Image 1 (tube, rainbow, N blue to C red):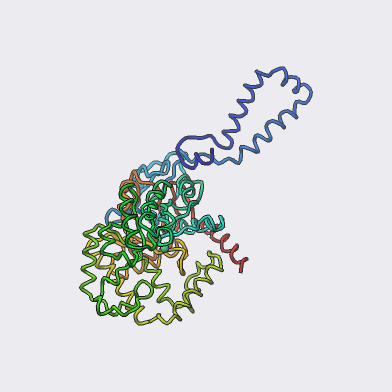
Image 2: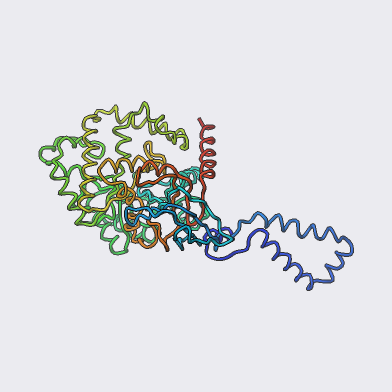
Length: 502
Ligand SMILES: [Zn+2]
């Protein structure tokens, strides 16, 4: 309990030595009440009494963590990338207390309190922590150690918020533990275990699911598959009880209905492909993976039209381009060399990724030309969505096909830049936009006073090159400083463990 509350940063709690002295005072008070017994013991074995009482007490208490609450973390002389507009505030001192940014001022005007932990930020850049808006967290059926590894891998890359896209009852508990700081990792927004044709085969079951998941405490409903009737019933019940839904767009639903039903977010740009082609011309074509085989038939003007309709509906998109490139494009012979972060994943999972993708590429439906056209159409669609003012969120779908949690956010950002977004706009997709999406603009997503201290300290300016986001000097999660050395030490421990499994 002490550990929990201390990390939560809510109240001042004694720790280690301080607690020990309080204990001594308490013992002396008790001594007066049971004086005769104590006196007797003192006469017989004076030293023994001290040892038997104080030694175990010291041992028990010295290891207790000190309260984080009221503790102050100061980033001194740092360049701030506030993300409110495209700018850098040079040489600032940022003061963090109780997990919140409480003060930002010119470094030469700053006077950190004596008890503050001061980090020298000279030459470094402080930006808001990133959100991975299409994350996966292993469920209760997976080893706890693996779940914790995944959470840490996100955090190691400066991902301080994840939207879990396939729920599990264990996530509800993890969400609280992560919020309270008992578990090391990003904040978790938890999907339910998904709406699908299997779980909700009828309208009655669809409606029931929405009510049940709201009551269970999930943050939103993940849509996976299902019939139009069950989907409609789910949507109606979800509106009634006040729970949002996001994810796939079942073929029977389609994007026009998804926009009308107001998905919170459509993920993977799912089901957009059929809206971009002439249905008669393509009636006989098997679409394959996310309809990629329709790409050669896409009519450009339809892209703009769908982008405009998406903006009008106020529906957000999480493109997850790395997933498409992993399955259809990236070179399987070189991928292991290009992704040194594979060593942080269990080797059997990496083997399965490579094998599954290899099988897909050998499938009769695989068509390299269509695949290349497809990823380009998607970049055009992302650009059109952006230009029309439809909301975009950063998400790479990890852990999934070559996407190691946290690490996969970097290629995803590169692909967003390739789509035509400025670096500032790409960074917004992972910072400001998620805050707007969750209606928490005044809580996170920018570096400003009053914001939650979920931050990344970088060696170089991310606005100059998105690759600089890889150069993490340290991560701050809820005001707690995680330096590079600590990140490396933990990463190495994960890699060593997996090396032993091969
Ligand atoms: Zn996913």
